[in-house]
Amino acid sequence: MASLKEIKNRIASVKNTLKITSAMKMVASAKLHKAQDAIGNKLPYEQKLHRILSGLLQDDELHKAMHDDLGFGNPHGHSPVVLQDVSSDVLPVKEEVNRVALVAFSSNGSLCGAFNANVIKRFHSVVSILENNGYERDDIDIYAIGRKVADAARKAGFILKADLSVMADKPSYDNAFDLATDLVDSFTEGEVSQVILLYSHFESPASQPVVRENYLPLALHDYDEGDEPVDYVLEPDPLSIVRALLPQVLLLKIYTVMLDANAAEHAARTLAMQIASDNAKDLIDELTLAYNKGRQQEITAEILDLVGGSLS
Image 1 (spheres, rainbow, N blue to C red):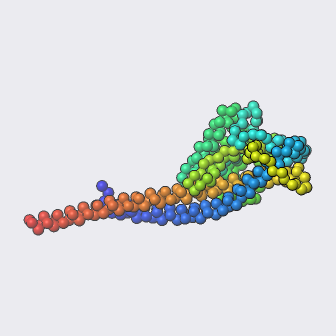
Image 2: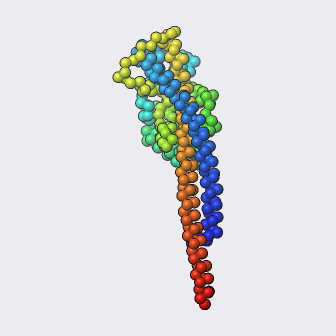
Image 3: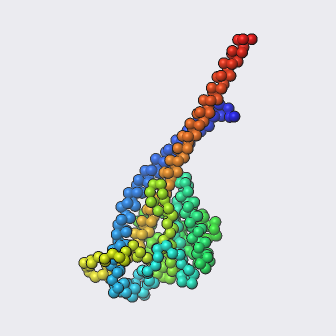
């Protein structure tokens, strides 16, 4: 059994740790509140733009004009089909798509529970499925937003297409614009035929599931075929509006994903620090009880010694 001095030192040590975890929880909670406000303001806007674009493209003539006439990022005026009737979460097969880009989001730091472990586990799972679908590792361009997933990709033998870990801590519109431009240019110039996003979604402060979805070609899956299309009054003309709207939808998608992943990270860290603080309090209670029991035993032993000495 540990001595009373050792127990007392452990109590002091755990109390110091409790101060640290409590402070980290307060900081993470404040950052989470700010991140929630950011994603709460942007996500409905991005979803509405996506739905407007989906509604506009229910017109067959406009859809055809988009494919035939809209030069999106291609100087010759004919881009790959940016809009396709594809599922948002189906991984490609080598025979159909020659090269893919995988954009993975994690955090730069640790102390956020299983947040990074879940992303890395899903990353390896996606890579394994792509390899089973016929892809070599050289056929997959990795964009890493977050030091943890960047390190995991390097350990897996990948040479990163881009290490954008600086974007993980402070998502910005300018950074999102640069990343979206790189991805769209890579797609329209034929360097990759599909772009896949992998990130943690802020579902609630206690839940941050890892989401995988296709970014390009753009899947307009949010539009419900059973709904009656909205009869918009358009000015100047539908094609000009879609020409301006499509880049905004693609840019805002990247920005909202960055904000979403950032909010999920702070939520995971807040929860992890709360659990650590609760465990520290429980440990302090157990050690205090052990200390009191040990102290009581010493007092009892001293009394017995006094009584025994007086009788002799």
